[in-house]
Image 1 (cartoon, rainbow, N blue to C red):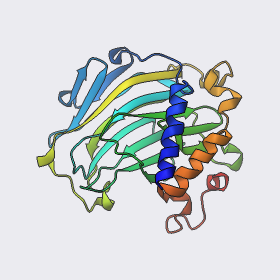
Image 2: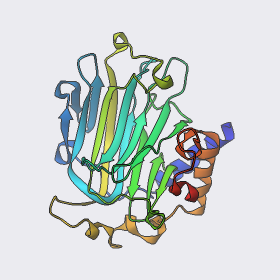
Image 3: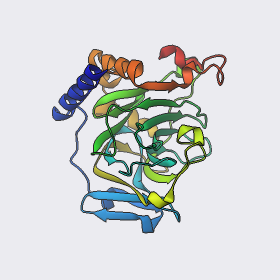
Length: 286
């Protein structure tokens, strides 16, 4: 197990140091984002944003623009308290519509001495229920780590420190809806103790709060889409993230992804026969 962690960390650092996932310098927060709720629990310090949860409110922020495709990057450090059960910290993209498309990173809190659980989920045309959960190979509250979402006409990929941890392919040929709405980039922290940690058995303790998540190094390489614009223009090959090298994982990335699934994934909706006696059709391409 230890060797797997070292390999993943080394490959991720190499990818990031060679700029594989970067194409634009960090942006001023106020140029690209706005506070969406919990104003009193949001602090801006230079290029760092801190959002907090206390007994009165959670908080969050969102991008000013919506996007049809791109690579979206943020560095995040989770609340540092030793007990954060019930505290849900998110970084996600959503169309904010009734039949929403949504791509979720959700950190589900932890109890003392236990690792954090990272959950991803994908909604397309209002249909979700595609949760995958994994135990991270590092403490996400000890330092900043890089989280990314790639969105193009061929696949959605979630990366941690340059390592793919979730892939959702375009399986429209199988009758599976794919992401086709403009998406806003969002982050939040909120009380999810009814379900988040140990299935809701471990409850939030506000005496340990406020719980603060930190974000920095915002980077958007994306195709903005206005409310009256055609999203199809965002599928053009003129954008590097739509290029053929991003249509699927390369051989090294596939090896990394296989390691993650084999050693760190502890829940996959595709194999949950209590929920899905017949696996959803997209699972056949996993």
